[in-house]
Amino acid sequence: MKTILEKIDGTPADEERILHAGRILRAGGLVAFPTETVYGLGGDALNPDSSRKIYEAKGRPSDNPLIVHVCRWEDVSYIAEDPTGRGKLLADAFWPGPLTMILPKKDTVPMETTGGLDTVAVRLPSHPAARRLIRAAGGYVAAPSANTSGKPSPTTAQYVAEDMDGRIEMILDGGTVGIGLESTIVDLTGKRPVILRPGYVTQRMLEEVLEGVELDRTILEGNAVGRPKAPGMKYRHYAPKGDLAIVEGPVDTVLSYINGQCALCAEKGEKTGVIGTDETAGRYRADSVKSVGSRADEEAIAHSLYRILREFDDEGVQVMYSEAFSSDGMGQAIMNRLLKAAGHRVIRLDEDGARRMEEKMKIALGSDHGGYELKKEVIRWLEEHGYECVDYGCNSTASCDYPDFGRAAAEAVASGVCEKGIVICTTGIGISIVANKVKGIRCALCADTVTARLTREHNDANMLAMGAGIVGRNLALGIVEAFFGTEFSGEEKHARRIGKIEA
Image (cartoon, rainbow, N blue to C red):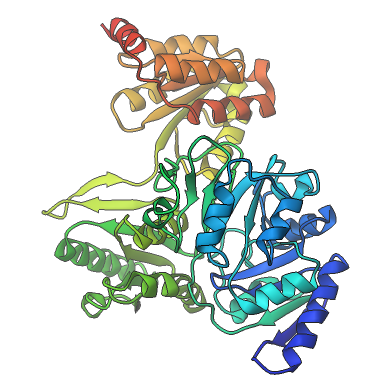
């Protein structure tokens, strides 16, 4: 497929180019176009084949929902309900603009567009060319960011072409976008509005219109699991090709640590990059040092972030470090994107430069020969969902003794080396008994998702045991998802009983 590149430059010729792009979308094709946030990859939101093409072009998981772009509030009623009226209040305050609302969907929207959910994400962009394109396409354009899934979102047509040339019919080049980070996403389907992805429209701004706006607990954490309700919640996103870590702590300590790490990388022949600010960039010693702007100007930082990550890729940078930023206001959106890009790898330093805490939740795994193949599938799932896996064996299907590996995994959890653990043998029985003999371990043998959820909720289980001969791959991954997606209830009666277990 040859991808057409058309420039949108404010001349009369723009209209015909946009109408041409609209005809492509109506025919089921794909067009990348500028918005005020990032470039979007558009398809007909009401055509399931178009949505499938978007997932294919991006290499995007099909359970990651797409945002439907409209050009008028009145058009929302055809695809979604607004039973509480909160959507209209937010639209009056922030549309057109960088705010996406999740509402109950109508049957007019295919499940392929919503990732199988009965809700739909809707937004009305403020970029004039985007609105004209949506109108030309029939009023409903599904559009995630126009990049290969997982990479930094494109803020120029150049980076769209790097990822999408030959995969889509057309790219509309509108120059560099304004904001540089994706829209804020707020879920309006529950009792309270919940921010699922922070952006330019901040929590404080939303609370000026609606009462009780909450933040989803996974926004600045790395353990979101389950079917994502909004783009960017479940999978690693915005990631450069090299390894990125965020370093947090006193300024001089951060500078010293990053410069020391860059020196070590240089000895190994690794090319390094640092994301600093106007206040600190001149003090770093790396192969490539880039400032995202002044800390006093969070909008400038947001505007520069994705461009810098892309530039590091262009330069072949292998190891990257970034300073941390505020988690308030626009800084919350900046840190959300940085954390996703780094796979939630955060290095926290105290005043003396010692590391206080390491990034991802570490999971200890152990199995015998009967659980070995399933363990590999579980490890793959955990790593895809942002966990760090520490495998204590076994390492093949050759016959072995499960107590050796079950005990090793349990001891890693009990000692604090790993936060939680999973052990697998043919039935799950023997290896769970072994784990529970280690003081401080509450290992639950689960053969269904309900048990997995309840044992976390009631027993605060810190290890999961499964029988590979009992559950099979799909059920096992569902059990893992339920286990890690559930928090301990904290109720007094459950805490009291756990205390008796531990006595």
